[in-house]
Length: 127
Image (tube, rainbow, N blue to C red):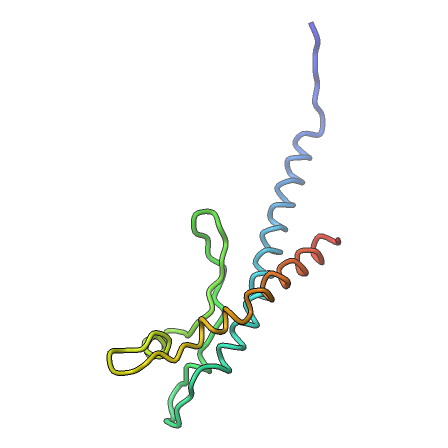
């Protein structure tokens, strides 16, 4: 009968777990970096009124990473203070035509997002 003894398995599992945690941090930082061009373009595309109040442009944020069906993603958009007004601009109303700013910002940067993600992951992995 043959016997097999494995040594160092606990250490290997510990290292793999540490690598997983590091990969998660890299993924979060990469997604946030890739979202910056969208946020910047959305700020430049949104209409700004002359009324003195908090403007949508000043309230566009990059939100934290979320997970849905095992896929991590990040959201870019107005905060709670201006979200109710932003949807009127983005989609329009029965009396006002849409003046979108988020969708065009995303469309403009779609290819750039992929390039940023590839570049940041290569840097993090040392490739």
